[in-house]
Image (cartoon, rainbow, N blue to C red; front, side):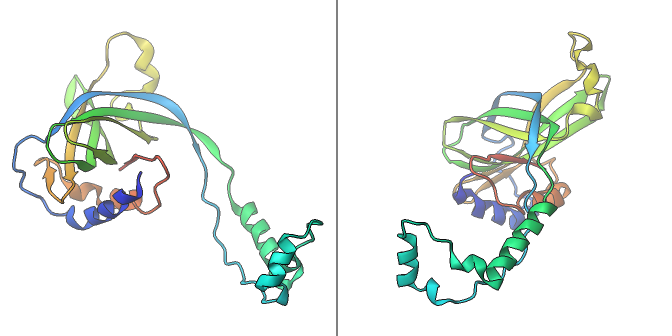
Length: 233
């Protein structure tokens, strides 16, 4: 997600408790297409963060001596590595690396929706959900909600993709999906909230933003990676 979207996302936490009265019954977002699939995701744990002591101030660290050492064709050993602080930092790095779990691959699900912005304002943030409905019992609905930094310009389409460890298992066993050609559940995408450039907001009347308050806080608690567009709620 681009950095310019981070500030609006943080502001959303403040105003999301409000229930704006939409100027129109339906949002200006048209769902062009959607699908889901099973895949594998590699989870890379965040390394443990320790406190590294500040380096001892040595004469060798002064600009003249440091530049001379950098230009030394013999690549002399950095004297800082032999100080108490240098050895302590090296030991601390070893300890932190030993405490960091290895990356692991897990079964996950990819959810994709292609939307069109039919308004004259750019969409900055989008809350949407993928629903799985049991045809024999329509009240049995599995909902997978997502938050996206959409950045969709007026009259443009965009494909959004999100990943989750949760699939349609609330409705039917994933292992039975390939048992026949007939669909065992109905699928649809619902737009819950749209935040436009300039601060205007549309929100679906039936959607209760309070129900995702805690998951929203977790979703924005860590920095977004380059290219990351959506997160599960």
